Length: 343
Image 1: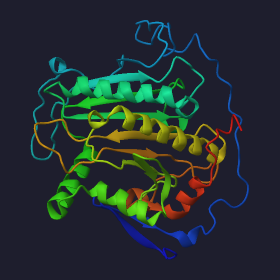
Image 2: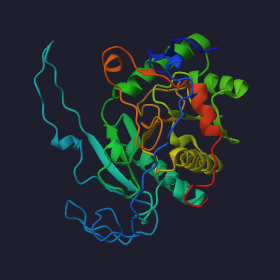
Image 3: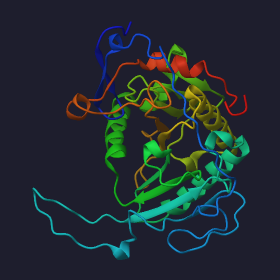
């Protein structure tokens, strides 16, 4: 099964992925290159995110000891009062977009990434993500709250200090907008949230599950485009972080630590990725169709230095992959949950 070229539907977006398993029967054959990562200090006096240091915009960080959030000094979006009206027509359309951009430092430690934090420290990060969501969602001009982390230079991260960003926007961006359409259509047809059915089917099949605990499941989605892409899904009904209780946040911290540790252990490197939550729109509608979820999009393919590029047919046609999601999940499942730096 799944040994010949085929394409898979991503029900969240309505788009397809080309899978060509015959091109790479054993994707982890041969030499596995490793890189020597430079050691980072616990506190870098030149880092603009470290505790007590001056940021690039001139403001000084407090002597924070836990998770720390602040307004982005070089925000991609500006508040409503800074917006301007732009004339548009049917071919060349540009309309104002305003919002709020926040930065959230996971820890004062400059040298630790998410998998190297304790579960309790990750739980604190989740709590602050939730607090930020609660505050931003009360703004009547905000519809979408996008929490994300770009980890590593390969993902364009400009500072190695462990941190994430939150961009709260007036309108839904492209990806959540596509997901909203698809989830609404599925709910209207089946009277159940799409991702609730997905996680149930995946738990029954147990072919693409990577980690599962009482409240959450991390798996390689059937429609994954990136080699070791994963999605984190709740085993209960929730549409945003605001729906989680303390125990569910604790369980999420457990899943995130175990999943990101597996990522680092795969090629024994601080594994680069872009990850983020997709929460229901914060508008006046009741979004019973929406399931809170997290996407992890890592670029590495066969080693710490060989990465996947979306080029050629993938840019002009559709995304493609050689490693099947089933084999990627198996590879991730095999890995230890003890971080390679401590093994």
